[in-house]
Amino acid sequence: MAERPMVIVPDVVGQPVDIAGETAAAIGLILSSGDLDGPGIRARTWPGLFWVTSQDPQAGAIVERGSPLRVTFVEDGQARSDVPAQSSGPLPSLESHADDDPDERLRGRTYPGGDF
Image 1 (cartoon, rainbow, N blue to C red):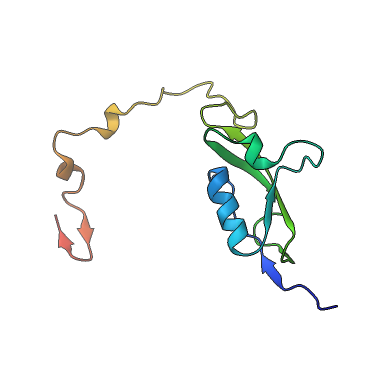
Image 2 (image 1 turned 45 degrees about the vertical axis):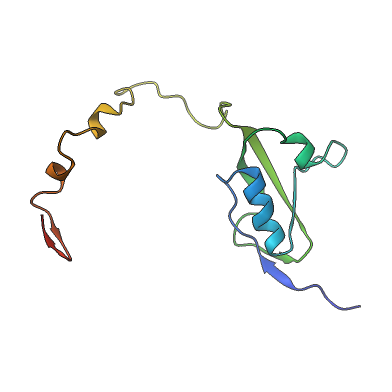
């Protein structure tokens, strides 16, 4: 019997589950939730938007084509328990990013194409 070709595991953490599934399938891996007795990953993530939070094996590992790529995921807007809550410092704000003159931030800087 012929040996299966080897593939390099892609990094799918941070991707939507449907995109991670397409990425895995493109190189011959099978995206799974790791729960062999429960419903499949498509049944668990439809309808809605779900984000991959971890994967096994890790990105860069070399595995046989046809191997499972097990992922954990959260629904869009759901809090992740492994992200620490902000306990001090300024609150996030878009005001610091909103300028009346967007070119003001660029003046005086040197760029390969010239100065602003």
